[in-house]
Length: 261
Image (cartoon, rainbow, N blue to C red; front, top):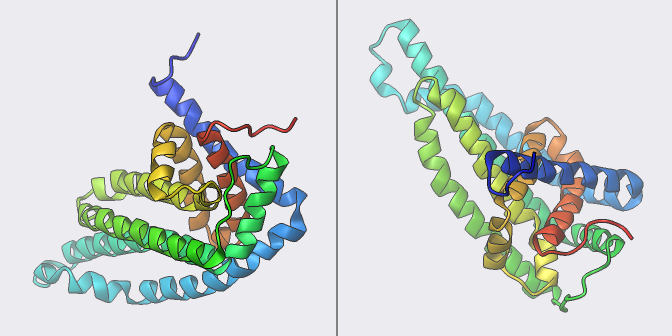
């Protein structure tokens, strides 16, 4: 049976195809271990800092849950425990979303020379960048930081209502995490394709427009990266592979080949 583009089945297939781009990035990682291992170094540094920050959140999450639920102080012990467990899960979910996105933004800035080289190598493997422009390092870094801050601000704006929705029984523990993964995945995809788009003289609005043209593929890639980054050490070990996969996603979104001759 032919699948009509835009149907649920077609979207699901494109979503799976986007997730497969991360697997292809991992394959490139394995075939070029020397270059890819350099990309682990900045991720390891950032990862240690963010792991410490999340551990701090875990330590204080009970106090935070109590602080935002003073109305439950006079409830029965069982009811109070339930509402504060829900509050704690909401804090941990919001913290996880912001941690993954902030980790990615900071690591890309810290390891810019390494990740730029990884991205370039991937593009060279599939035909290069015919429309590349010369981008000086410092202006490129400033633009990268500015665009990352915009994406982070958007994540906070979306994360706050998700945090509030996390208090809704059942919905907060089922629907909200799925929405959070989708939002986080989309923002990760937009963030990670930055280097290939900068090489072409394109900015954040260009990234958004190109990825929106095939949103299921971008979401498939981004959600796969988001879920892997939530696994302990996953963000550190897979950051170079995510950069490699993002180069493929950028080429695909711009209509350029992602198969070798």
